[in-house]
Image (cartoon, rainbow, N blue to C red; front, top):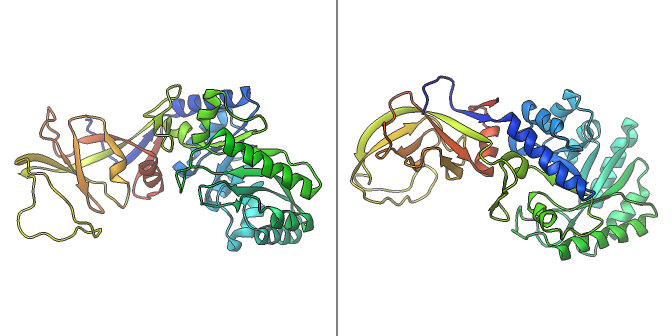
Length: 359
């Protein structure tokens, strides 16, 4: 616990991000794989972007146009990739800010090419293949429409193919799945009549294949965010032992400390989010309220720095913790620290009410 002002805030270790990027880049380079560092988890904060660049990534990827436009303004000199399928309404911004984008519909290719013609620019796309996770992508064996649209395009070229794992359906990467990606790329290449260069084999969850030496030859790009930022692989349910973990922490200020019952007194309904909370009767306990809430963070994704701090829950503006076994007990104005998982980090980085410091 510390006593300071200016909270809540998310504090990130710049050195750990640089080192994590360098370690991932080294592992990838030794396998002939380029690293796209993904900044969306921290809303492309400048200190993180520059740390990833210093760590040796080859490209920067983000899912938001605002973020890509900001990264472009930093002048990193690296190519930029839009990770989320572009909205038709943002195509004009896309061709100005991004060098490449991930695309899954022929109609989107046509829109991009039309805008490129009008702006006298060029653009590259990665054709996204859905290999079973059921998020974005052309379903297996149905790339013909993408090929037809790309053959008609005058200023839009297919740079390669890509796949996503784990983000929706929880499907894990495997050598068999990635060989399907290679096959899809080879078929697309034949239909197009020109060579494609990029086979992007997923994100953090695909790193385990590199570690095990089972990544199929030909996969030559990975898009990595979580591993660099947190040293974790949530899809694979593992901590990555060769990367720094606990690279960042939330600091939240105590605004109330009282001893109260552990079970509400009186008739109860649902909470402010429509849920029916369940309470364990542990008698009277010392409780602290912190000035951060569900508007700012996924509370369930926080781990207290002090093991004796127990997170009980929260509302939109407050988080309630049991501090009965914390010695010395926190006082009004004390600062408690928490380590975020990916979901908590994403929310904290997005909230305009949370300060963000790279130190």
